[in-house]
Image (tube, rainbow, N blue to C red):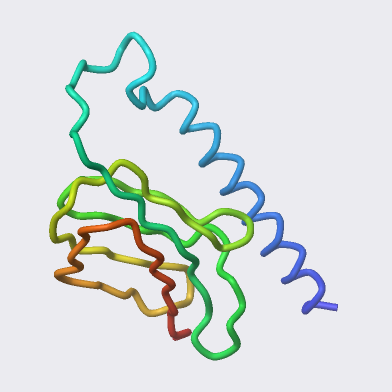
Length: 125
C-alpha cells in the first residue's frame, strides 16, 4: 500500500513542478514583452536539445534541472524528459544537471558550434 502512495505522491509532485515551471515562464519577461531590455539578436544562434534519463533503466526523468552557468539560465525537462535550449551563441559552456535522488552531473567545456542533440544519463544515489 505504501508503494502505491509513494507513486501517487511522486506523480503529483512532478505535475505540480511542471505546472509551476510553465506558470513562471509566462511571467519571466523573455524578450517579447514591454519589460524586457532591447538587445540586438546575434547573427548566429544554436539550439541544443535532447533528453535526461536514468542511467540504470533508461527511464526518462521529468523536471530534471539543467543549468547553464555562463548564461545564468535554468530550465527543466518536460513531462517526457525532453529539453530544448534555444538561441545560444556558439561557444563553450558548463552544464549542471540535477534531479532528486540522483548524482548531480557537471559537464564542463561543452563546445557548441552547431545545433546538436545532447542526451544525458544520471546515476541514482
